[in-house]
Length: 456
Image (cartoon, rainbow, N blue to C red; front, side):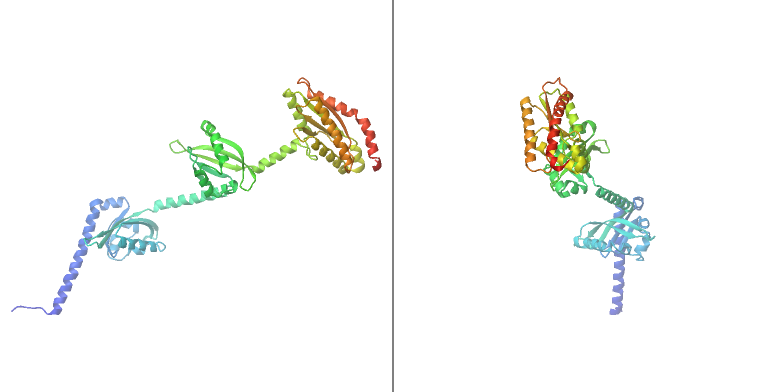
C-alpha cells in the first residue's frame, strides 16, 4: 500500500528544500567571489598592499571579505560575515550621505564607481578609505553581486591636508604682502601667477590682468616692454632690477621697482621668470622733493646758489661760449627788514622773483644766490640779446612800480657776456658783479626818495 503524505507535511518538506537551496547558493556565491579575487590577488598580496577585497550581494550583505580587513577596519573578517558589524555603520556621519549615494549609483547605473570617504575604525581612529566597486550582472542584466577593493589612504590624505594647510598659509602671506609677486613663462611671458596686491598696485582686477597677459599685454604694456628690453641682461646675469613709471587707471603717476630672476626646476632647467613689483612712488616723491629743495630757494621757488654754481661749472667744463650773465641786487632790503620787518622784506623779494619769472620764462636759469642777490644765466646769447634782456628787465621794474605794488622795487643790475670758451665763468660773474655795484650809489639815492613817504 503506497504512502502519500498530507499537504502540511509536503509544504514543510518543500520549505526545507528551498531554504537548503538558498543556503547552498549563498555558499556557492561566496566561493565564486573568493575564487575571482584569488585569481588576481592572493590574501597575502592584499595584506601586503594594505588592500581589502570584498564582495556583497545586491543588498550589500557581505559574501566575502579578504586581505587587510583588520588592518583597515579594526574588525575581523568573521565580524562582518556573521553580521555582528555592518560596514555602513563604520562610515563617518559627515560622509554617510555621499556613501549612500555612491552605493545607489552602483545599482542604478550598473557601472563601476569610486569614492573617498572616512570611516571610524574599531580602535576609534578616523581613516580615509579609497573605494572602487563594480556591480556584477547576470545574463538578465540584474545586479547579483558588488565586488570591489578598499584602500587605506589616510597617510596620503594627511599629506594632502598638510599641503593644503601650507598652501593656505602661503596664500595668506602672499595676500598680506603689499608688493606684487608675479610669475611668467620664460618664453612667451604667459602669466602663471600674480598675488592679490596687484589689484591695488596696478589698478586692475586679477582676472583682467590674466586676460591682458593672454591678449598680449595691452593694459600692462610698459611692464611687458621692460621684460623685452631687459631680457638680454636676464640671460647674462640671471636677474635684473629697474625702476619704471606707469599711469595708474585713477590718473596718478606711479613708480615701481621691478626685480626679476630665472627660476629653475629640479633638473636645473629654466622653468619660470619670477619677480616682484614694489610701489616706490612715495619714496620717489620724497626724493623729488629733496632734490627740488636742494636746487631751489625755499622762499621764491627760483634756483638756489648750489644749482647756479653747478651750472657755472658745467658751462666751463663744456667749453661753452656766448653765455650771458645778469646779476641783480635788491636795493634797501636791509632797511626794509630793520624798519618794517622781515615779512615786508620777504614780500619785496617775492615781487622781485615775480618780475624775473615774467621776463625770463624760457630756458634761462634764474636763481637767488643770496639774501638780496639774484642771477640769470642765458645760454646761446649774443651781446645784443643780452642788452635787450637787461632793458626788458629795467622796463618790467618800472611797470611793476607803476602798477601800485605794496612796496616799490629797486634793483641794481650788472651784466657780462662769456664770448670765448677760454673765459672762466668766475671772471664773467666778477665783471657783472662789479657793474652791478657801480649802480649802487645812484640807486641808494633813488631808494631813499621812493621810501621817503614811509619815513625810513
